[in-house]
Length: 188
Ligand code: HEC
Ligand code: HEC
Ligand code: HEC
Ligand code: HEC
Ligand code: HEC
Image (cartoon, rainbow, N blue to C red; front, side):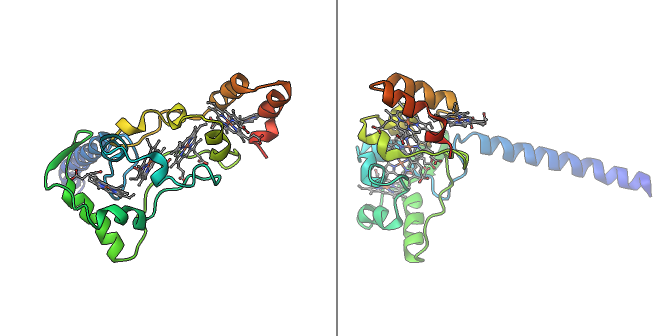
């Protein structure tokens, strides 16, 4: 009985290990989290030069920048069906038209696209885009050259040092320096 078990379990285990290895490496070839639609920032913000704030419109008026709604996408994609060509999406081949069709499916079923988050600060940290954008800090300072990324991915871990270093360098006077270094500015 035991011998029989050993005979079956070894090949089965091997298959499981090989399969998980395959999926693990296939997954890790893409830099960001797994997304419902393989949306390219390079095509939109780079090649077609759509301004960041056209899509992330709340970035300078609200604490959160927000991800655009399906309605915003359809503002263009009700007309733009996309070329029926393969595109090298960071090492993975996708068909532009098929990928755009997925957007239309969400629109037809009136469902939001469940985008996975790329950057997330822990809950005990306060962050506000508006103050930074109004001060003229470029998106790329914190997010890297997004217009050249197919897959948007984290470029900074947003450690305390990353935030405070810039706060120290940008303070205009002693009073602001004290404010920007105060623990309660970022933690409360
Ligand atoms: C056509 C609309 C569009 C434009 C233009 C656009 N984005 Fe995005 N952005 C999105 C969508 C949709 C997502 C969510 C999907 C994803 O993460 O790829 C996103 C995600 C992001 C994220 C990650 C969000 C997170 O979860 O942390 C960052 C950072 C970002 N965009 C920055 C930029 C910057 C910087 C620009 C300009 C260079 C830009 N975006 C231009 C639509 C757009
Ligand atoms: C201002 C116009 C505009 C808006 C808004 C827009 N797109 Fe696009 N999109 C384009 C253009 C132009 C292309 C390139 C089509 C081509 O070359 O065939 C494209 C291509 C695509 C593609 C295929 C290439 C790729 O990125 O994988 C997808 C998918 C896509 N868009 C999804 C979206 C989603 C999702 C949104 C909303 C978050 C959105 N688009 C908003 C103009 C727009
Ligand atoms: C000073 C650094 C900094 C700058 C400048 C900055 N960001 Fe961010 N961004 C962050 C941090 C930190 C987060 C994560 C916030 C969180 O988890 O609360 C974030 C998150 C985001 C998200 C995801 C928000 C969401 O609703 O899920 C988007 C989209 C984004 N940024 C776009 C932009 C765009 C577009 C610009 C330029 C107009 C920009 N950011 C400028 C630091 C910055
Ligand atoms: C590239 C420079 C830079 C980086 C990086 C940066 N900040 Fe700031 N931050 C500033 C400046 C400048 C101000 C002052 C803006 C104003 O009010 O004019 C500020 C203001 C703030 C404020 C509001 C302060 C107040 O008076 O209430 C908070 C909160 C904050 N930052 C948190 C963060 C956090 C958290 C991070 C890291 C994830 C971060 N910042 C990264 C430059 C930066
Ligand atoms: C400019 C914003 C900012 C200021 C000011 C700031 N912190 Fe932080 N702090 C952060 C961020 C961002 C993290 C998250 C670090 C991470 O996740 O790696 C953090 C993490 C921490 C942690 C958790 C330990 C860890 O590494 O995860 C402690 C404790 C802490 N801060 C204490 C303080 C104290 C005490 C002060 C005042 C002397 C202070 N912080 C001022 C942004 C700030």
